[in-house]
Picture 1: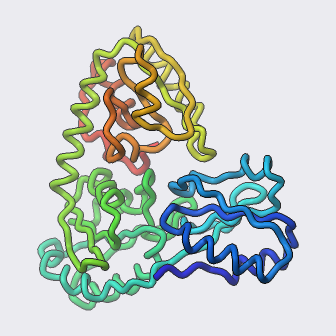
Picture 2 (picture 1 turned 120 degrees about the vertical axis):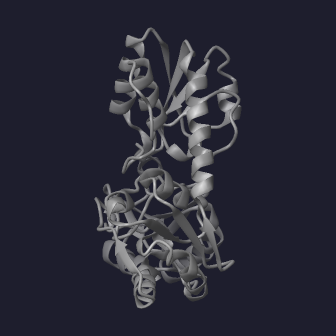
Length: 333
């Protein structure tokens, strides 16, 4: 069951006395947000707007939209980090999953004992469990390291584009244990660190070796990169979500590719889908600078669509350099 910090919401409303409040949350929380909105409406005499578009992470805030709607406060729920506020109006609200890891931790001991030194990571909804898990594993004579916080992430937390807390301890551990059911985040740890990675799923109480999948996805990413190598007309996609508009990165990639005679088109999109890109028939390959997940484990695309790490590797190949370990970096944006 997901616990949302309603007390903080009530406290902020009492302090700031807004007339219009908005909620922004991932798809999986929308039903709970509807209930929460009704509850808050009953407590205060104010207007509530719920954003029902998909929300993918801390990069996917709605500051521009709330200005258009005259919203006084927007509560961004479910992407817990070490800061409380983004911009002028976005207040971050924790949402934590109360699922216990006891059984899957017990099940993991036989596997993890083969590696002795373990790096421990998780995502926002399980971050409150990380010290409990570390204590349990240490009592089983495992050496456990939790990477220190980086930027606005908490100790041991990873994001879909930032694996700094794992990457920075990769040389001190022999393998990683990821607490949660998110294959993408576990895959990111494996690709970023180059270390064996095990996903500890508390719902099915299963321990999954993510390493073979990481090898498969790395090979797939390299194949896509080489398919784009001969493309003459390349579209660089600018993400219009507020935390995904990386204009300096776009310009740098554009300049480097133009040095090699590539024809570059700049495209702006909120939602990057195969259906939208299919309309752009004169473009041979795409580079999207919004979110690495779109290229790595998103929907299937008819044409190559590269993430930033793949685009940087493409430029290295065009420069005559050797390309290896595309994703072994702390950040992918």
